[in-house]
Amino acid sequence: MKFLTTTVLAAGLCFGFMTEANACSRVTYTSDDGSVVTGRTMDWFKPDEVQIVLSPKGVEYSGLGANPFNWTSKYASLSVNSYGFVNSGINEERLAVDVLYLETSDYGDLQPGEKTMTSGVLTRFLLDNFASAQEVADYFKDEKFRVVLDEEKAKLLGAPFNVHYIVTDKTGDNVIIEYIDGKAKIHHQKGRIVFTNDPEYDKMLAIRDYFKEAGIEGGMPGSSLSQARFVYLTGWLEQMVNTPFPEIKEEIPGYTFADQTSAMVFSLMRGVSTPYGLVFDTEHLNNTSTLWRTISDVKNGVFYFDSALLPLTFKINLNEVDFTKPKVISPYKDHIQQGDITDLFK
Image (cartoon, rainbow, N blue to C red; front, top):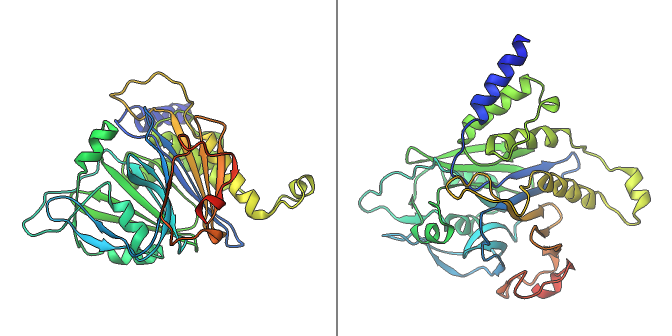
């Protein structure tokens, strides 16, 4: 009884507060055969003007802000954009990039002479310039520009654009970038990983470790709060198999392990999604409906988009995409059909 009381008390301390946060979730799944699959949800209280964007290399971009840090893209990419910013994407070198809300982000004060990059542009910069997680980790050891709050995107979102970032490469290596006390804080970890919202990643790991000690498989919390989603996803992700299910292969002719790994991550992200159609308190945006999900089969170069607003799931085979041709499509306004839509990007 003492253990139970302590567990309930600690859980209350971990999950008993709300934050104004975009309730997105992100995972990396890896297996012994080298499979790397990422998945994320996009949760918000209103439609996000979603677009699928193919961006060629050799394009000039501005970091915006008072003294913009500018660059020319080294790599072409495919991304899902919300309100014009890159929310989820993968480049031609198979680097997957996602941005999620972190209310407690602190970008610090702009110093005289510093180059600037707004928080809504940094995902584009990551997609354009890096082929591996190690390259990202090395680059951000030194401050080459000051990330500043993206006021324009904040107006569109209806909330401050305080975020943190994650990249995953084709080896299953992950880097998380958070801005804490005005400095970029880097977390570098290979293999399976879970990423949600507040609190910052170090504190989230402490919450996860508590539930691990308490027996995570039997005690996963079930609310939509960021901490609960983190613990929930960690418990399921750690139990996922590394090998094919022969019974499914017999049931579905031509079924591959790549099909299975993508399906497993799909099931994770659908399972942690917040139901559509809830009534929201817009001052507490941690509990908002899932609008869409993406899955990136990083090893095999297949990108999936899964709508929560319509029964619409489609995939794009990056191995067949013409990355020299810019393209923008709206899944809804352009009446995109279910299934393989790679031909739209050839």
